[in-house]
Structure formats: C-alpha cells, structure tokens
Length: 466
Ligand code: SAM
Ligand code: SF4
Ligand code: F3S
Image (cartoon, rainbow, N blue to C red; front, side, top):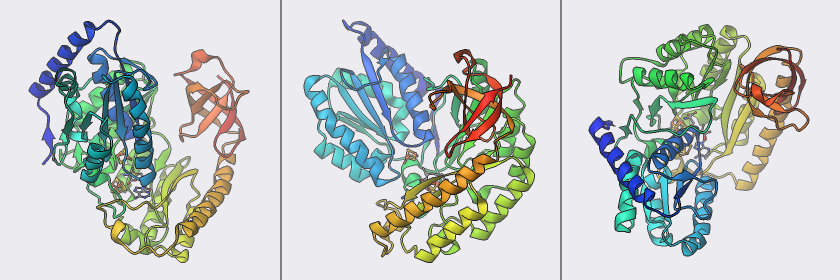
C-alpha cells in the first residue's frame, strides 16, 4: 500500500532541518555538500529535493566532493555499468574520507533498494556512513542530524510499496525547465527491468498538487514543464483522473510555455491521449515511445503487452493526428534468446517508423528479474556487432529526418549557450530537437522564431527571424 507522508511528519523533518542549521551556523566555516546524481530524470528530480533539504539545513552546494562536509551519491540500478560507475566513484572517496574524517558520505537512490548492494556497501565501503532508500528521502534532515550528533553508521531502507511526500523544498537545476514528478513507481514488470523492484508500486500525486507546482514554477519564470513518471500514461489510475485531464489543465494555464513528458508506455498510449496531445498546443510535438524490440516474439518475452503490429498502429495514429511530430524510442539489443532474425525485425521496424533519434542499450542482466534467469546463447561480442549495426542504421535515418526541418521556421525555446562554436545560443524546437543559432545571451529562457538552415546528425543550425 502507498503511504502518503503526513504534514506532521514533514513538519517534524523541518524541525530537524532547523536543528542541523543551528549546528551549522555555529561552525567556523560555512559547510558545503556535494550531490552526485546518476540515472534518469526521476533521480534528477529526487536530487533537486535532496539539494533543497541540504540548503534548508545551511549547506552550500559544491560541484566537487573534494573538501565537502556531506557527499551524497544518488544512484541508478538500471544497468550493470551504472552500478559499476557508482562503486568506482565510491572507492575513490576513501582518500577523501582519510583527508576529512568528519565528512558524511551517503549513498541513496535505486541501488540501495537491493539488499545485496547494501550488504556490499556495509562490508566493502566502511567510509560510507549513511545509506537511505528512495522511501526515506524525506527523512534526510533527521538522518543528517543523527550523523552530526551520534557519529554512527546508519542504514535506512524501509520496506514499503512506496511513499508520496509533498512539501519537500526543491532546488531546481534549471530556471527554464521545471521537472515535476506526477507519479512514482512502476507496475509493469517488464522482464528485464529492475525499476519496479526498486521504485515500488505505481502511485500518482494529486492533480491539484501537480497543477499547483506547475503554476508556481511558471510564476518563477519557468518556460517548460517536464512531467515525469516511469509510465505517465498510467497517471491518475488510483485517484480518478488521467494523464489527458492533467495535460488539459496545465495547457490552460496562462503564458507561452511548453509541456513535455516522459516516458510513455505504448500499451497505454490511447487514441484519446493522442487526440488530447494533438489539441493541446503547448504540449511538445514529441513522442518518446519506447519500443524495446521490433520482434513480437521478443516483446512477449519482455512482457511489454503489445505486438509489433500494435505498436505500428499507434505510430500510424500519432502521425495522422500530429503531422509535425518527432518520434524517439528506447531499444534493447541482445535480450536473452534474441536471434539474428529478431534483431533484423528491430532494424526493419526502425526503418519503417523513422525515428528522429534513439536511446540504445545492450541487455544487462539484473538480479531478481525474470530475464536474468533466461538462457542467453548469443555472445557479448555478437551483441556488440548488432549494436553497432543498429547505431549505423539510425545514424543514417536520423540525419535524413533532420533534413526535413531545413527551410522551416520554428518557435524555439532558447535554453543556453550553443555547443557548435561559431553559433552562440542553443534551444529546442517544438519537437525537442536541438537547434543552435546566433544571438545575445539575454535571449536565454525566451522563445524566439528561428529559420532552420542546416541539419547535422544530432542538431540543427538556424538563424533568428524575430
Ligand atoms: N519506464 C520507461 C519505459 O518503459 O519506457 C523507461 C525506464 S528505463 C529507466 C529506460 C530504458 O532503459 C528502458 O526503456 C530500457 O530500454 C532500458 N533498460 C531497462 N532495463 C534494462 C536492462 N536490464 N538492460 C538494458 N537496458 C535496460
Ligand atoms: Fe521498467 Fe517496463 Fe516499468 Fe519502464 S515500464 S520502468 S521498462 S518495468
Ligand atoms: Fe535508474 Fe532508478 Fe531511474 S534505476 S533509470 S534511477 S528509476
């Protein structure tokens, strides 16, 4: 069962934050904290809450762990290389702890929701003094207070189907894009995926809380509202609303801004939702619709609950209703039992759909998931060859897809300084495609109209019209 954290509990944590603040104000030098977030937008959003609470406790935020009084690793468990990276970084902190024995080194996030990981940290990383799970995030003030006053190792990973905690302070990473989680957890249990085990059951925030947060962010100058959830299409199932209604309510708020969202599961991408997106002019013309594989046989083994044909029908309907849409996707190469002919079906699907871009992954077995137990006869070397083949095919498709924007005049949200060198600014088209153009830095955070002049394979180049 989902636990909604009470206002009293949030108040209690606020009181702990004040106590920590008082301790920190007594210190000679103002204390600093470093937060390193790994993984997806959901984790980035948790990182913003961690930073919000640390600021409330009087910590200045530092870009580097060196010399920081609190170091927090907010971790991701989705693939083995994500976990390896965390362990590598944690190992390197041993020297930091030797230099600064009072530093509080903490690990939180998805990795520590796995018992074997917490055991490994307990045994092999004695310099880590605090571990807290995703359901204990809101108790950070109490945990830090405990560290400062008791100096004992603490492991707080409560068993729970998941919590919803409102009223935690947030330190947003971006002034332009406000990331707003609308739901947490996942019930889909795709056979390869660890997320349902580490993030608990699906639970939605109230529609008024989400709309209120969007309104506040817009008042503070945000120009993009990014709605987050592992499967945003399931939003509101338990509280009588749905994602379409949420989009319509946010779309009706005043001002020029964009609404983006991620991720959507194809099994729940209903025609009603696609119609709503088509009608709501502030919603991005971008659908990130992870397909994972082009083979219905593999999709069944993955427990995705749609076939290749179902997926292609959704794509057809999206393209019919939203003419200027950009499609992107996630693909897993080398799922256990995937044969060359299954992989070729993935290649033929991407040729048919013609995605603007793809996020591609080689299957990584995750302990506790069904797929980790399945026979996997294809070698890593073979998977690597398929993977590079997929990248090459998408590279060609992506460049061709970007060519179609050349000559178009598009409304672009200017997000920062450009990366292409000669052009000073960068922004996003309504399709979420990156475009670089010349202009003064006062335009950052504003909408401008840009004529697209050239396509690269990862971005567009253009010129401001007004
Ligand atoms: N909930 C989202 C969805 O279903 O589209 C995505 C969640 S997951 C964090 C992001 C992507 O990681 C997935 O779409 C999948 O392609 C990939 N992924 C998840 N588990 C994986 C695994 N065990 N090995 C390789 N890739 C994986
Ligand atoms: Fe993982 Fe599937 Fe849930 Fe996405 S929908 S988080 S891939 S289990
Ligand atoms: Fe990773 Fe957790 Fe996100 S496993 S991808 S950080 S939900």
